[in-house]
Length: 177
Image 1 (cartoon, rainbow, N blue to C red):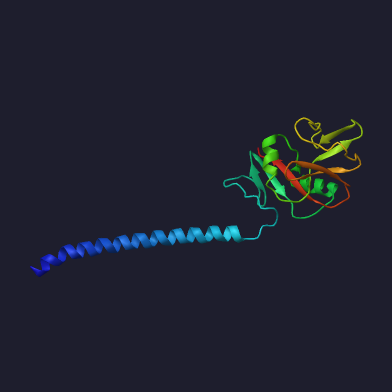
Image 2 (cartoon, rainbow, N blue to C red):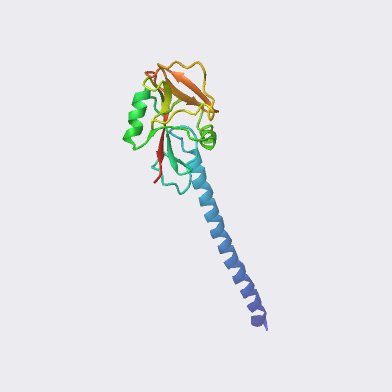
């Protein structure tokens, strides 16, 4: 009779043992994932803290947003040096196309960034690098801009002009195919 009574207890203790193993494995997986996320978040960023999108087709250090990749520099260059750098990466200085993109840019940091907007003496107009004109109705643009200067962008929808030879951070933009 003593052997018969121990059988249910063996079964119960066996089930409890298996449940403990499953719980320990689950806890181990959760802790490992938690620590790896903390390591990612605590790793110093080389530039402004905009999170790259998961599954993005962008190069390392580039940020994906709406089928485009953005490089936010952590190195200061003149407007022309910035333009050449972007071209060497098969991209161009930032050309803002709509309000959504402008809203996205408001989260990039607190610095002044060169963008791909310059004055064309030939057309007497501000042109983006692709030759299209700046839409005065779409973006608020300062009225007292020196046409000798180049244009940059401060987050929170502010354009500003600076001497082109001044070194600033910059933003490159690349269209995903």
